[in-house]
Image 1: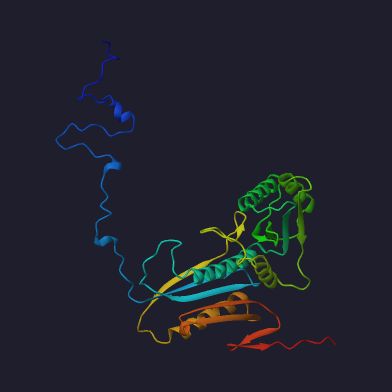
Image 2 (image 1 turned 135 degrees about the vertical axis):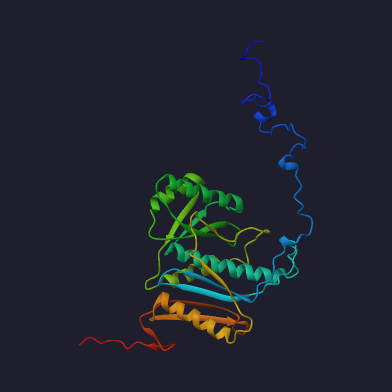
Length: 323
């Protein structure tokens, strides 16, 4: 045996690696200690009750503030006191209060649609229809995804917020809230390629005269969510859809206040109102709602030159008449 074929002994400076070590295993132990246990065989003891896994409650009341800032056209804030004691989570889909949970889910969906419409600055409504009686929900969503990819390949980026509407005959078609005037010819060419020439239609509806972005977002969210009650929805199926990259601007702040602090609710409300006026301006309209004796609430505002806030109260701005 030549020197090149002869393996080096344990006293050599460059010992030959073991075959298992080349495959990713650990080197065999040559001392008195036992071999190391592979990672997948090691016990984690997660089933035992250990104190490091228990989270202690905070020393005071935890308050949370959530802000959605869309500029001077719309700022929305919500606040509330968090309950540190959380109840047990039940099995999904097995709640006894199914009707109440469905009503809350519809409210959250409408609110999210409105926020996403404001995020993309939606001012147009695009409706995609089928000539045939299309009742396959998965097929409609698949065609909508194909349309997005076709527009992307054509260099036309079209952020949208979409929901499905069911007609009286049972046919489904999507409504898309988009920003700006779209290339109708390109939309129809891509849509006809998906559903077949003459087997569908693309309708574009522009904004109403004199409508503000806030009013238009409300109208779109109300219009495209009007059939939530009539639309069949399986468990964990989404009510709305949007293109990639549509992220609502969100700021979250949490802080702990002493439980002995007094008049916290009034000070929290004053803080929220001052922050809204700082972001939108003193010439604005504010809408608010509170519950739980001020322990939670909601406030929104948008710029309006006809009203000015002075010393905590709104006053009408006198109109200037031209000479």
